[in-house]
Length: 88
Image (cartoon, rainbow, N blue to C red; front, side):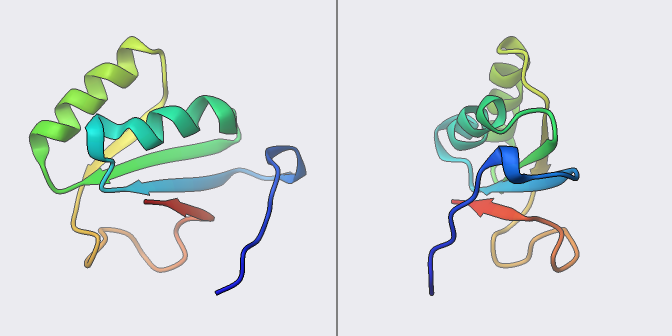
């Protein structure tokens, strides 16, 4: 698998990023959201509803716009190709 580099400035249309199993209460999604900017829709996915609640509360306190969804990494609740970037 090759690596691709990208820059948020190179993006001309709305894109989406998913953080799967955002361990540590969504820290990956919460760190990515302000770096990616408003053109990016950030979704955090975790199986544990408690982690989602804690992450959601932390993100709201930080003023971050993140969608929090319950789901398994093996069976994501999204259609194929729903995300432009996935972080784990």
